[in-house]
Length: 142
Image (cartoon, rainbow, N blue to C red; front, side):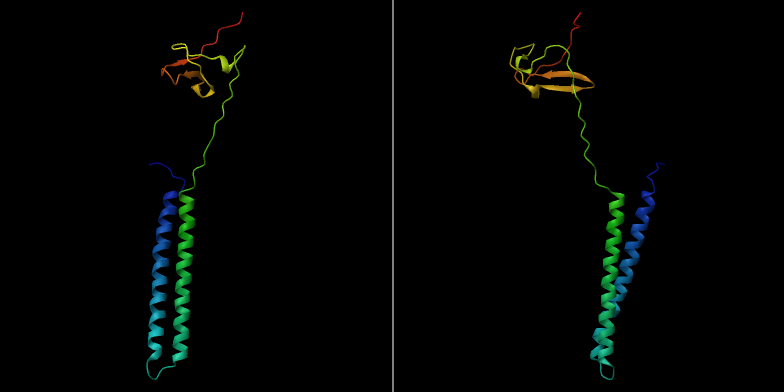
């Protein structure tokens, strides 16, 4: 069983908060609408029922906002944004190397800086004309 640094627990907590918060917000909204609806009934204090219903609806909306906020916070903790990592590799070529004078070993076409890449620590040339791909080998200077 792989260790997810507690992410499974946070997922369960997020679902539980979403269910409980949704339930309580629906209960408050239901009773708020019920109190407002019953404010027009004869023989009751309409002002008290109306204000109670509005307060209950307001509390229900607050519960919805808090539930969504906590759920979004936990979701962001579970799924953080991926950071783009850029790796820069500097190549130090010994000797006289001029990029303007580089030509393809196969077809003799003029190569530019976009033709040079590095793979696994080695320098490779890719010719855009003939499609050949070869490794640059540096001869010793002695």
